[in-house]
Length: 304
Ligand SMILES: [Zn+2]
Image 1 (cartoon, rainbow, N blue to C red):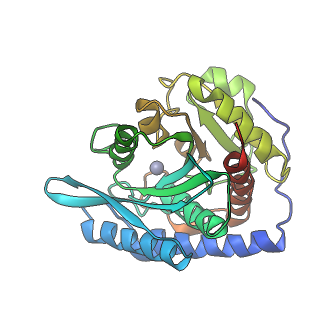
Image 2: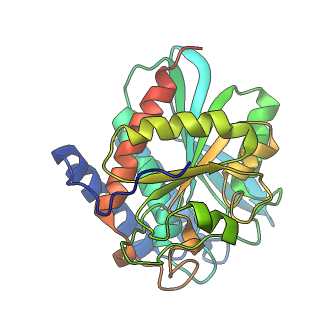
């Protein structure tokens, strides 16, 4: 779904400036202060979990740990709920671990900062559908797309309980933007023929079954008109399409989409020690999150 291309992001509203400063503070905490957080840096992984729980609690929400073990050590997905009038839910998630050897400011401190900012904004709201915000552990290798991936454990438990998740949104590496020519690449030359070569947009990616959700989310996002967006519903086997927690929900029969700056196809510091908080474009990152606030509000108020 190629869209119109605006060369630079529009100015932020006062609310978006507040959001931007929250995002910057939370990315600094995760990607700067805590830094690398994974099963090798286990105490930092627990520090990140504690920070996320504390942030949810400060927003007036009650965090719950969804725990499983890897090699005898507990790992926690962390969830909160804003109960709606109906049990059908919209689930918004991001992973909080970082790759071995990297502080993961953009991947995926940005996704977690967005989840926290959105949770603050929806806390206490009355909605038709239930909203759930989840921070997933162990997305990165060697757990990636295995039964020990945090979101896979989580989504499998949702399915076993019969949770009615009508939409899952995976926020994956959403803070890098560039106006430079050829700053955007693609997993295949074919895609590069149809989509922009300038990395100034936010991407929406779904599998074929999630095409309806993808189109609806993008239509709502584009009403904001401050940040270009591009999207595609593609077979899950195409490189990059299944590269985050939405994969786990697809495996369990749910509709799910990923929102991403396209990570390795744009971000030079992807999975490197240089993925630090100073590399993010916080103005445009804030526009992604404020646009997603509209998307989530609309999905959660939908009656069908
Ligand atoms: Zn990631």
